[in-house]
Length: 132
Image (cartoon, rainbow, N blue to C red; front, side, top):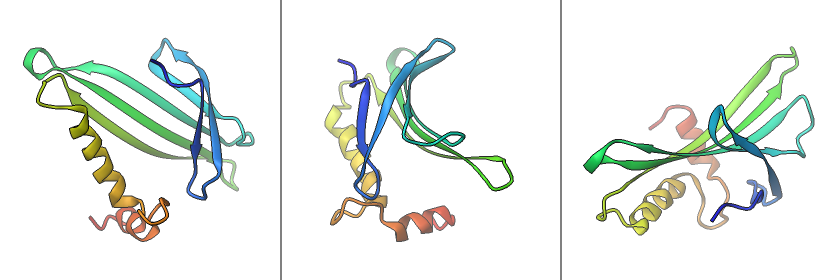
């Protein structure tokens, strides 16, 4: 079952952001979606890619979700920010989907406030300063 062609996601303020499917890219496997509410020359995209990795007993599926935002600064230069989540799901029966769900939840818990479900700006600022 495929994701809806128009994904409605919530930003940190709780506002809806719609990413419309642009196309499956033959030159770059995966699906590209674009936030059409961002005014040109700026742009925001959501790219979802799945691929098989490894062989035999170590085979797995790698799923990568990337949100990229391009802004043009006051000098006319493109500045690109990107946030990605990569999930490697082994083909082993020991790895149930619930194990992967817990792993993703733990990462989100690191940067999301459970009280407001918004980005924990203190934790994220510390990570962005390299305070790991």
